[in-house]
Length: 223
Image (cartoon, rainbow, N blue to C red; front, side, top):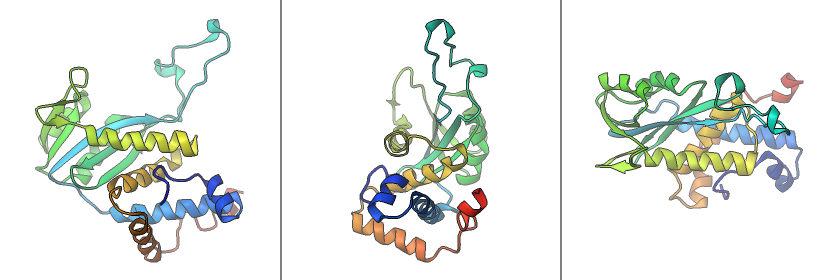
């Protein structure tokens, strides 16, 4: 809770004087508990929708003649994922990872209450949400905010998540990206609270959580 961008498992293992594997599982159990706060939550009022890609970095070849255009689909790796964030203004943040940003349309319909106002950029795949929500669109090539339409809060969330991954964890597997995305959203939503309040909130979630089906005996199964 003291780290605005979270703490790596390696740092936790040193601080707690435990093995790396112990710290890794402990951190993920804590993330699982805090994610439970919003497991059934649906957003309303004005909700910003946006996506950002993570992982799947393709290292360029040493010789210039051997380098490829990483913008072309066939030159990318299948490990790359997009996190779609739904952020209610003055409310909570929900996030989930997908292969493509357009895959997040069903997620938005599932977790936003019908009739709410949805703010999104001008990418065409968000057009289909107009049948369920009042849309506010912003063309980022012209402005970041115009006449009250913007996705700045979602962008703020992505800034925290990017710094969390780059500065603390360095590399996150696609299968675990949802956990880190939920962690960043939780920190963003409660950023105004003191460290003590954050610790108390997390401990209440931990004490009310059942035995983890994902992380109990994780390393035994992984072996």
